[in-house]
Length: 86
Image (tube, rainbow, N blue to C red; front, side):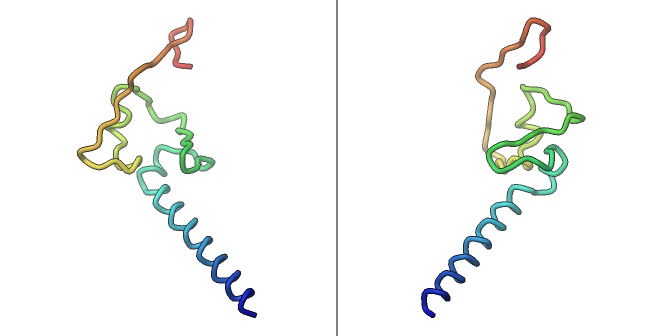
């Protein structure tokens, strides 16, 4: 009986922990820029969002959970023969 209760408690804890991480990822700003099949650690951007490598992180700080004093800057980018980012 103790094992059953322990398993139930662990299951509920794991479920609650997952729900908390998902809700912090899907903030209102993230909903605006990310496709629904995005997951924590891998964001698929919506096609109708303009993507500018130089300003993306500054514009979307709140969606990405960055604080006011956090900075993310691109350190390298490449383009293909037609000028598109790979």
